Image (spheres, rainbow, N blue to C red):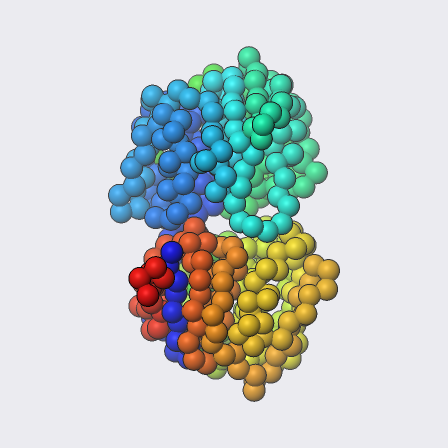
Length: 424
């Protein structure tokens, strides 16, 4: 296993190119199951999660090859309908194959998923959606077994605006007979991007970008080339890192519209931010910031995926105290004990973290451990602003969602090294 060694105190400066969206790519890839043929998915990030999905699709009979962020997929010979545990256990997004397999082959056997070691993220909304479309669903030995001679359009209301369930049902409905209406659908940019790719493939979808999606099923879809949208969570992470270190950086290949809520909060902290069509400039003249509360929400609110990073920012020499509330996943706080090891003063009450900070309070380097993807990003932000050296272990979590993060940060002036722990 690898670890990061970070020496804090350097202000970030320069330019950084944001990669394609991890969560976007993980939705586009299963969509290729719907129509046999060849696809080129451009701007695909080179990440552990993308490789996990590639291995799963290879297991199903597809051919996948990633070269310089161009992903080639051929689903012509994809002929298996079982997604085994050994592939699905590492990533919840693997469950996305359920809808496309069921729509194309009339059957699917998919292991219950794994992923980050926090929070209950059940797949009951996915299952209820498939049942509404006419599928017979059984649970046997940890596998969801779904069968349907032909999916039939239906009215489906999601009790929770779930990104995963929206995407899975949306893909299945494109080949169903008749019309499907998904209400309280997720409106995240990654779902909008998926819907637009499906339309390019020949799907008939109305209401894209809204909470009500209307899908008129078609007999067949066609392969296409598509480009992944920029990763808004990666972009937000670098913006927060710049704020934590008092830096000044430019983000390239980014969609500022996807980050409106985050930008507003950073400006409230005292950061100066300027945007144009695909660039964001942030300047934090000093590492002392005004403490600002946040409450996560579904899009277009503050993403739960930046809650941990914001907590780290608030622990870094802020003026005053702050309250961070996660309304999406109420127990996503495993990064808190590790931040406390660095000297942060944080209390957890129910689904809120209360952070006490001051301009005189400095975090100090220590050995810490990433418990999940975004927790790892939070530890990097804290380490960059801390005095001394920090060692972050279990960084394979970070590699799931951040492409070449140590190289990008080094180019921005940070001291961060990847070290093989079994060699020292």
